[in-house]
Image (cartoon, rainbow, N blue to C red; front, top):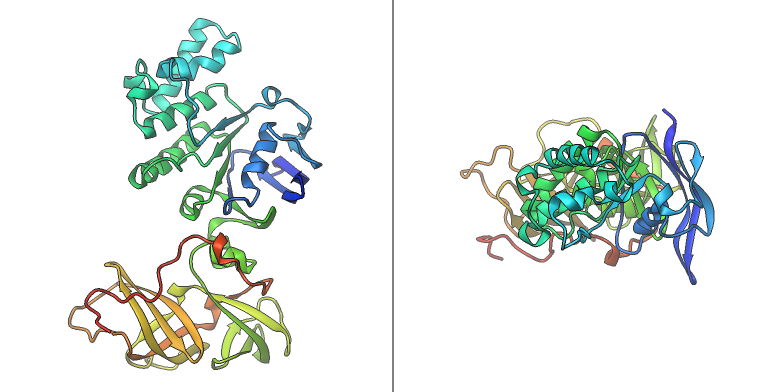
Length: 389
């Protein structure tokens, strides 16, 4: 399927700051596509250029084969849902939704029919006569979405639309947004800094960092096969192991020599040769931690001795931080079958750490990650309640 929306080498500068740096990617018709990244990465600037509120310094933007770079906002068939709702306080819910149709000079019976369809879509029929100060934040967001959709835009832009809502309301609105997208079938371009939102809603995600799209892929691919250290860090938690290929004992696998660490086996999807440097990412849930050595000798299983430094028990899972030589490793252990009469793992215990060679992923870079740009992580140096040090 050809791309419905295209950014072709788009660059935007504000003074000496490059907000967007040669962004080139396409969005398919009807796709739910998310721009994900920290504040200042360029995602909202891309959205504003598509909406016509900013003009690129370089590059072109095309919609359904037509260059819209120089068109004014009202000629683009693109509508925006803002974080602050931007509802008219003196108009009722019905009149807020009808506003665009009235401006366009649509007949009265058509306006009533279209607004009633939108009210049903966002489940606000019983609030049609209410004013914005009489409805909740979630209801205001629904009205804002209905107002943006009633003119039947070809692309709906959503700029951090759930950021002002509390957690439970945000979770409910995620489901409703997904249902609305399925119902109307138009292209959604969604801007967020929240990884959970992007992962749960999107057909594809563009992860942005310092004005550059570092990876564009399906949510599962972004998580399981991150291209760069930034993507691996920004989407969930991970452990980085920077080493050198010491041997390639079999096709598609290599051994890494890592400072302060035993040699480990990893899948060699990048076809690295002996002597090449490798930055390896291993997600915390890929590890297994146990008091006893892993039973049997599973092929390609890395097994190491470690010492427990920190533990946080969280009901359905436990987070461990262990030291392996000079390395600190984070582990996420889900409680699929957690028995109270099992011997517990405690702070200071010597344990066995294992993971399969296929569960590490080689990254395209080895650049250090700026921790200030990343989402909050599970706090370190914290022991579980009842696990006295």
